[in-house]
Length: 599
Image 1 (cartoon, rainbow, N blue to C red):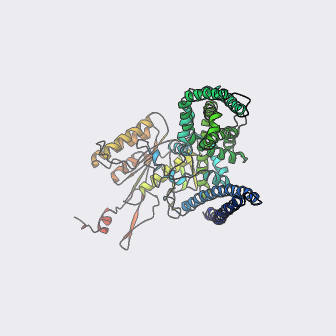
Image 2 (image 1 turned 60 degrees about the vertical axis):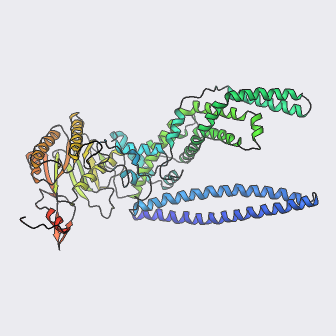
Image 3 (image 1 turned 90 degrees about the vertical axis):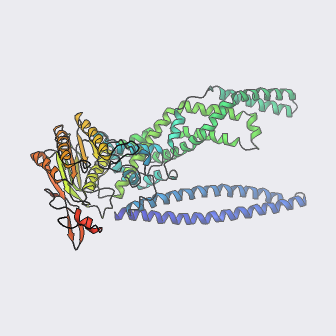
């Protein structure tokens, strides 16, 4: 972790020094603008008093200088905003490595789905979630793509493709940085969903020929007005031409207004996409996945950079019409009608291509998020994808959301021949954390990311978990009923012949011991017989007999505690066999409850 942390800190120091210099330059330019403005006013007063004179040249030079200072000031402001975004990105990297990452960033809570078979159980979305840790996306498409990768295991070939790309991007610090600061992230990712909606919306009723027709009419207007002013044409001709143009413009005005009102935000977001395209175009990739994305983004036959630049020019023209000095000229030239028709033609021509650009950008951002995690944790490894039916074999496995200096590593194997691992242990001994460690690392593995382990081999699997189900007053159902429904879904998944990993915490704890024993046995034997593999935690030592009944297909392991100098101590390490002690009474006494032996 030291090397990544040093890199982030070094870059932070550099950017902060640059920001300090920019602030000084901004202060200088502001003072210079004021000085030039006052000087121009003084010279203008002198010229007026003298009715001309050499001061007129000074006024002209001052106006030019003032304009140059305005342009310089705007550039400095843009550079300053980029530096502030860079500081935010780099500081976020430091926060991840210093375990302060839960403060700020995009937590992905909008992607939470209570009906998902493991998303809530494994804390994939929401504050302190896996998404919260990983995401550096700046577009909603990128965030949505990353969320989908976490929630849906990819096929082996796709996983291999992502692993290769993530591995290469992990070494491209500057590229990942530039992708991560392309747009501000004020609480959530850039809303490219609105852009996608605009690209796919129903066409407006305005034909392609309207733009050239409006251009021709505008030229006729300009020519007739010039001819009338020069005395070459009667004024009535110019007035008639303007009246015809006004009637046509008035007829098309509602459509044009809708088009121009709708394009403003999509154009700004396409500018972000164009910035990403420019940055990606400058790279050379060896990973086929990245090279393919680059081809999609900068393909000459679709020219996305040129297309987006043309739309941006149209939007700038539309904005120029709002200037009161330019408005009469724009009206004469029917500029609004021209721009509106051309914007709609752009959407019809490039809408489907732009949607593909968004998809490619989403893939790139999701890969960059996983690559950033790989860079932050160089000790993590890419898992090996084994053949279907092979066991899950993990060495030095730890929970990815825990600080690395606190996460305890364990070795584990489940699959052929052991298909059920029963984990017994006392309260707070780490049973639930163990299940979450396995689940979250498999989520990372199936997304194409490195895992928190020294080594991990896994076959393709569907995951089903029951760890954090709760009562629902609104739906009128208990935790036990919610658990039963979840178990039915997991059993159904296994019944469809799909390889399944089940992770069940405190199985059927909401019912009496008699019903729990019968129900747990029937469920677990049924899952194992259907080819599923999994881990189950329990306080009820009677359930450990199920693993024993399975013979070589079952295994009992435990996590334990020790009472040392009146305090419970946990080592969170897996040990063979069934736990032989409980800490319930010690915990009750520790909080002051009057519990005595034999009572």
